[in-house]
Length: 191
Image 1: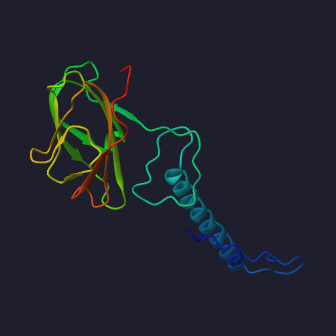
Image 2: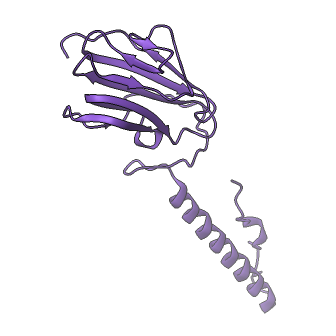
Image 3: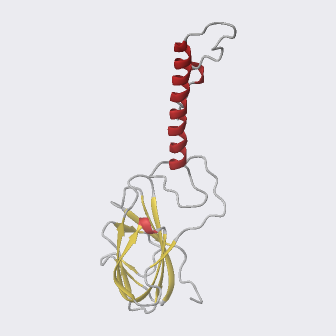
């Protein structure tokens, strides 16, 4: 952002000592100083409003952050009923974060919401099947990798042979028109 403050529009040599100086010169300098202060106030308020905060949440409104190096960061975990009472339709909402968890009490049917309009969106689903009878049905837009345990392509659903904890990743680069799914590891022991 270029500044509108123009220090050069103030005559620093005015008034000239020992001369009768025109009052117009004073008015011109005061007007220039006043305008620069108003521009400075506007620019400072803009900086205060649009800064990245270190003491609160910051929204970048889908603007790109470049050449950043991240350290000591975390993903938000969004639980979908981690008390074992979860069944039926569940929506993985990108606005809630990228890591979603649930523990089944019956069949689950997934949907997705708020994929980014451009760039890559990503979810990790950490799901604990409490029974081998519980299934996970995905959307028709989901393309499933061949490493997904219990996948039935004809039914667009997963039925696992062993109850327990599984991790799946869902990725889309076209706002959810096509969703790529794969499994991260297999059954996690001691769940």
